[in-house]
Length: 315
Figure (cartoon, rainbow, N blue to C red):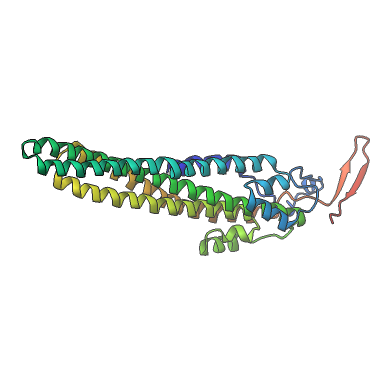
C-alpha cells in the first residue's frame, strides 16, 4: 500500500479543510460577532466553467475558484502519478518483456544445439536453463511494474475525479449560503447505507470524491495485488517441480507471495476503514451544521462604548 499511504497523507494534509457549516452556536456573544470567510470566491462561479476546467486540466477549477494552492497541488500530484505510470508502461515494461523474449529465443537455440551436439549436451542444457531463468525473472519484474502502474493510474484517475467534485463544491458554496440544520442520525443512516451518502447529504461533494477516490483506487490496487499472488503461485508450482526443496529460488518466491498477500489485505482493511471514517465524518459535519455560521446581521461594539449594527445581504 506504499502508493496509497503516501498519496493519502499528502492529500489530507494539503486538501482537507474543516466544514464551512452554516447555522448558529446558540451563544449570543458568539452569534453577535460577524464572521468573514476570506477563503471564498468574491463572486458566484459558473458550474459549467468550473467543471469543464477541472475535467480538462487537473486543478484548473480550483484555480478558477480562487484556490490556487489546492489547484497547484492537484496539477503537480496528478501529473507526477500519470507521468510515472506512462513512462513505465511505454518504456520500462516493454524493455523487460523484450529482454525476456530474447532470452527465450536463446534458450530455444541452445535446445537445438543440445540435440545436434550430444557431447556438449550438458553445457547447452545448463545455458538453456540460465536463459529460461533470466526470462522468468524479467517477466516477473515486468509484472511487478505493471502492478505498480495499475495503482498509479487508479490513484491518478481517482484524484482527477475528486478534483472535479471538489471544484463543483467550490462553485456550489459560491452561490449558496446553506443555513439548514442537519440530522446526525440521518447522516449516519445514509452513510451506512451507501459509502459517501452522508457527505452528499451534507453537501460535501469534495469529501464524497475523496472517499470514492480512496475506495476505488484501493479496490483496483487490491485486485492487481491478487493477480501478482496468482502469478507467483504459478511460478512456485513450476519451481517446486524443477528445483529441490529448500532452493533459494523457491524461498524468494514464497517471500514475494507473502509480501503481495500482505499488501492485498492492507487495501481490503483500508477500504473498510475508509467506510467507517466516511460514516463518522458525515455525522460530525451534520452535528456542526448549526455551529459558527456567518451572521448576516450583527452588532459591533466600538471603543467609545457605542454599538453599531451591520447588515449583510448576499445576492
